[in-house]
Amino acid sequence: MSLRDFGPNELMFLLLATRWTVLLALVGFAGGGLIGLIVAAIRVAPARPLRWLAAAYIQFFMGTPILIQLFMAYYGSSLLGYRPDPWVAAAVTFSLNGGAFFGEIFRGAIEAIPKGQWEASTALGFRFVRTLRLVIIPQAVRLMLPPTVGFMVQIVKTTSIASLIGLTELARAATQVNTVTFQPVMVFGTVSLIYFALCWPLSLYAGYLERRFASGTTLKIEAPLAVSAV
Image: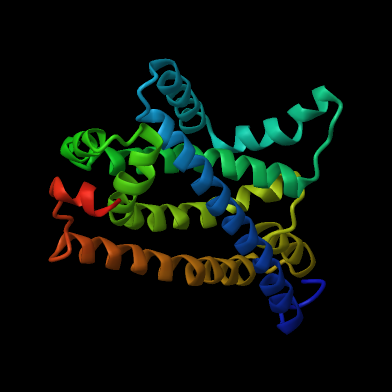
């Protein structure tokens, strides 16, 4: 027999915990996007050692479980005499992990721009950073958007592992509610619906962007675009 039935108060507790899930996902998205843009720029930079360094960063964070990365950030930092707040550890982990995936997404979009754009910019006297900022990235953004929004869905779902270091987001709140109600089907069924409500609109939007940019609005890139981007 349950200690307490699952009711409006428990549902409100889960909904309030959802805001931390959303906030953590937004932090991971913003931080990962910024890091990813820098990593992608380094990946296509002329300096080979920098490209190797960026590739090593990507391989590490894409080749190891994010749960291990989270434990390293939270528990491993104690070796340096510092015990971070769970929020800090989760935010740093999701930003660094997202940066690796976003870096590959952005690099693919950048490399999809024809080399003629780089050559035209060089002919105009543009250096690497200026070419990337004024010519390449504005054209690559449309190619980046669908997979970027799609990966946001993955970030939202992965935030649940932050509960393992004590962060009270949606998954941990569900565990707490279940311990006092002993109604796992009701509790975790409700949590599943909340995650679905968060992720489904993003999936639809990613699909919409993909269809839009694949039909009728595909990039048509010509060398004069480099001149018009000045």
